[in-house]
Amino acid sequence: RADLSQEQCWNLASLTERFRRDADPLPLYEAYSREYPDDLDTQYVIGRIKLGRDDATGLEHLEAASTRFVLTLPACEVAYAYFKRRGDEAGAKRWRERGEAQLDRQARAEAERSGVRGTDPLIAPQIGTEVLAHLREQLLSVAGIKHAWICEKVVEFVPEQPVYVMAVQGSGLFPKEASLVQAVIDQVSFPGETFLVMKGGSAEAVAKKVIEVGVPVL
Image (cartoon, rainbow, N blue to C red):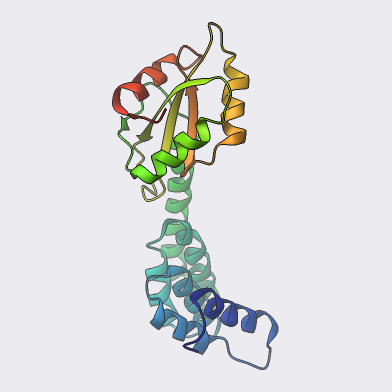
């Protein structure tokens, strides 16, 4: 299947699992995993299938998958069900506790991404000049924007998915914060999850910090 793209290889395996009751999808997933070893979604699926067949080697795949934040809880659920089915209460307890700990981490991750405060640590954004140029081009089309700056919020969980904070300054003497921020939301495509504040607005402390540590966009 050398002529297939990565997406096509994945679709072949997943569609085989869903619709081909006469075919075993596991070899297709394993072939995909050999070709794309960094795709941890496949590790999860292989682990799930193997444990469903009472093949304990599936636990190794779930261990690998659980190193990815969003896969940790699903991996724990599959492993827990496997041990419960086998009557191994000690094994089930270990994976249940791991799942409970992950639920706590997920709650904390959601909390740190739920907003931005003046006390939150902010740093210069790790984004390239092309991304900044694209942001600037989009902001130029938003009526009422005079200046804009962007920075990055330091997060403990899933740092590979950055959280940005943009401060905008409206033109005119009395720019309306709500309408200006909404206009930016409607017309600008951001490089990731982004909070918006306005200089002189309700989150002035945050805006000042963004201007201080961030980089100018417009």
